[in-house]
Structures are given as structure tokens and as C-alpha cells.
Length: 365
Image 1: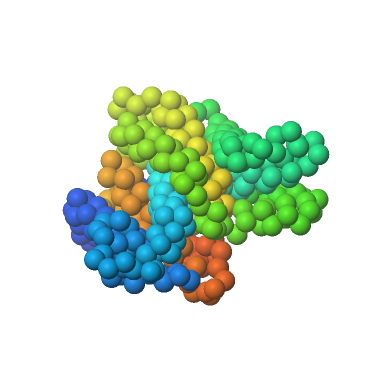
Image 2 (image 1 turned 60 degrees about the vertical axis):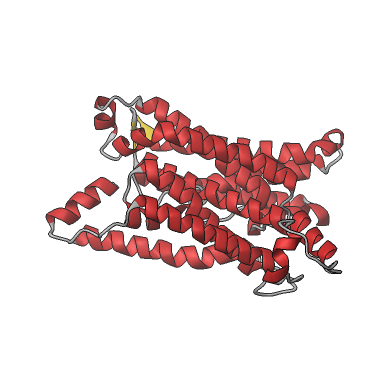
């Protein structure tokens, strides 16, 4: 059932409409929340940096007396924490925006790159690249492993998304039920492939593959941030052009076509964009689930379903969520680090069940 149908059905049954907050206010609040989350992440960790020393460590001003801790603070911030916070914010934004686009494309609030196997497809390709470049056959390409990894993840996500769309579409129409079921099947196939690679991998390869399965921001660097930033900017720029089409697509493909939308072109752009954003996110941090479900669904309740505002707001809330989750992951069991995928699943899975129960409740009325 589409979001538009759910909304109309709720109005016909006499349900009071939820009072939505102005979108500019929501975006401003999200910007403030992201700033606060980033500041907390900068100061918290195994090497704690008090808030009073943070401006000097960031180079905002020089202290009068030489601080013996300043070199250490600067090393920790600029070499470890700032690249990691930037990567977490961009990955969260990419995953949240991917989820919002998929939900608009398939007209279902349960669509998500991780849930339907798109992230697993990228992880499978990345795991294959790890094993191949570290083997005798791929020894000549071992020096390109850093460059091949995001390309492989992108290709895996693109192929998985294309297969999923092809299975669920027939005669120009997309079946939501087949889409979700095919996603579960594709996810199982890709997980089987990852399991096979883990079986034949050596200890070093197995550690790298485990990284993709659990998800972690520990490998974030300035180089990886430089890979994420262009894709995020491209996604934001593209969303300006596809937002109206996604809004009309909620009404159905026929209505969107009569509204002047090239539906098939919109689908192709959305599929490639989701594959690119998911692939580059997976290449940096591995598989992190439920961000694409939780963030857009929450924002629809607050600012409504218009994608012109929903997509940039999803980027901000996704960034806040993942920066906060990463900060908690590296402090909750310090000095060890908890995989961030465990935290997002612990929060996202109950939320996902709540969405299902709500959909069941609407269906029985």
C-alpha cells in the first residue's frame, strides 16, 4: 500500500492529521544536532580531549602558554577523529538518502538498500576483491586494492539493484510484494557467497571480510572521505531534479507519466544513484542496516512526504544518527570498540517491527 493511499485512507476514516513542523525549522534543528554530535564525538574517546582544549587543538586560537598536551590533541583530532566523524556523517547521509529514494521509487516505507540485499551485494563484491587481490592470481593488482574496493562495491550494488528491479518489474509495473521477497532471496544468495569467501579466505582476509559484515568506521581516513564527498554532492545535486518525479510517482506510474515525468528515465537515474551511494558507503564502513528505514520514516511524520525537503533532511538526520552511533560504539566498551552495525540493528530492528505492526493495524481497519 502506498504512502498516498495510507494517508487518504487515514483521512477518510476520520483520523486526525499529525501536526507537522515547518521544514526549515526541522532542518535548522538537525544542523544544530549534527554540530552538537560532532563536538561530543571530538571530545570523547580513549584519548579524552576536554572541551576547554578543543579550540586550541582545532587551531581556532593559540593559547598563551605552551600546552604540553596540544601536540597530542592535534594528532588525535586531525589524524583519527575528524576523518572518522566526517566519514560517519557522510555514510549516514548516503544511506538515509538511499533509503528515502528507494521508498519513493517503490512507494513503500519498508524499502531499504540493506534490507533488500543491495548493501549485501556491495559487500559480496568487496569481499571478492579482498580475496582476489590478496591471492596469487591478483598479486599484480594488489597495489590497487584501495582503488578497486570502492569500484567493486559500487559494481556489486549496481548489479544487485538492477537484478532486483528486473525481477520485481513486468510490463512497466513494479510489484512491491515481489520486490521485497526478491530482496530477501538476493540477500540470502549474497550472504551465502560471502560465507563461501570467508571459508576459503586466510586469517588476514577473514579479518577484512568480517569488517564488512559487522560494519565499522575504524578504517576511515582522509582518502576515504575524499571518495565519499563527491558521491554525496552528486546525490544532493541529482535529488534536486528527481524530487518532483518521486512526489508524483507516489500517485502511481500512470499519474506520474501524465504529470510530465519520464518514469523509466527516473527509475534508471534513481537505481544508479542508489547503487553509487550504497556502494561507496559499503566500501568505507561495510554493511550498516536500518538507517535507510528509520530516518526517512521519522522525517515523513515530522515534515511530510515531499522529497524536495525530505531528501536533504534525511542526509542531516542520517549524519546525526551515525555520528552518535559511532561515538557510542567506540566508548561503550572502551578500550575495545563495538561494531556499529550492532547498534544500528539494535535500534532499527524494533523500529522496523513497529512499522510492520502499524501497517497491519491500518490493513485491518
